[in-house]
Length: 149
Image (cartoon, rainbow, N blue to C red; front, side, top):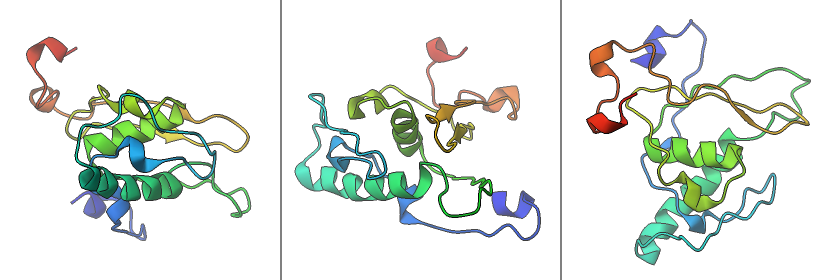
């Protein structure tokens, strides 16, 4: 449905890396920056579930983070449609926070988060959890009233 609303000629790619899984502290390091992502607040999930979330999370970091290299300075814009868990994982990585900091980063349904990766600069989280494009009755779906702002 989203693809139908985009300009003609914009390709659609499906990837397991943007799927609905919960990244875990077993996701290791981001190979581009070699930052540790383990913490004492590691997941209580069984090891097999942790590994199921770790491999796609490593691939998501490799695929969706960092500045574009070798493209002649051309900007690249990508729309990644995914789930709360992966958005929190990518925001955590952009902020260079430990793996456990993804917990509590809750994103509403259909909210927009933009992360900018510029060569030679730290990642910048621009809007996060932005719901202004949604009608008021669709904002904060799934969140308890005390978290609505």
